Image (cartoon, rainbow, N blue to C red; front, side):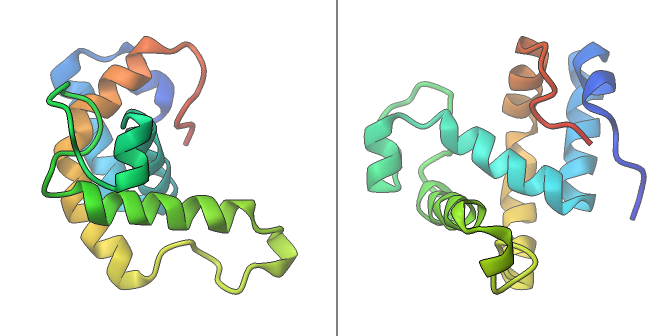
Length: 127
């Protein structure tokens, strides 16, 4: 696995470089991928989250072709995180196949994730 770029490096880099760093993190680190799915899901409106779809062209959240599958992954991740650690049946909230699909789909959301990271002073996606 390659080096994971820190949230601080991403926050302070110019947009183009930060986008490359986020994409590399999504492709090479499960924690970044999982937190990225949750961060984009959080930008869906409540009714979009409930419907696992896209209703508004607001340049936030998942696009219409990804909303159903990535919203279902986000809900699966949330259930896994809500399960006490000693009761979790699996070490990761997504299967190997789900991780692979999420990696392919999440790369296009690198720009949104950079805007999220650069808008906050908190380590939203700490390495």
